[in-house]
Length: 164
Image (tube, rainbow, N blue to C red; front, side, top):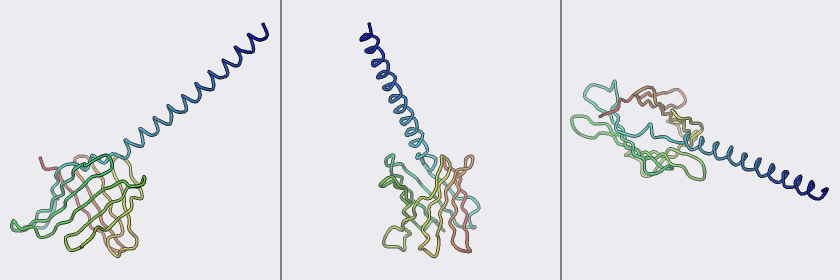
């Protein structure tokens, strides 16, 4: 009788331990799923046109999702049906870190801004080694896409409406 009680006690302890371990694994999976949702920047996707642009100019951004770890964008300004400014943009996750890589038309290579914060509606990227911009922020507000580029004493705001 004593041996049966001991075996039942050991079995119950093992089952309880496994149950706690499985519960811990479930919590980890839920946390990881939340992190994956938070790292979704699909709110950028689509074609956007800047509001409040100078008379005679039109500025656009187009964003596409390449994978869960890469988005590409193209920003350009047109005047009199000519493209007068263009930049390529990549939002990329590498080694568990997100960065924004920008290549203005006059630059031979990408300029990297490391993501310093993000949530499901915005992100901020910085490169303090530059004169301007040091910070780039994107956020979604209702049906608008907003961007801010800033440096020491200068800020430029952008507001875009979705193009259908």
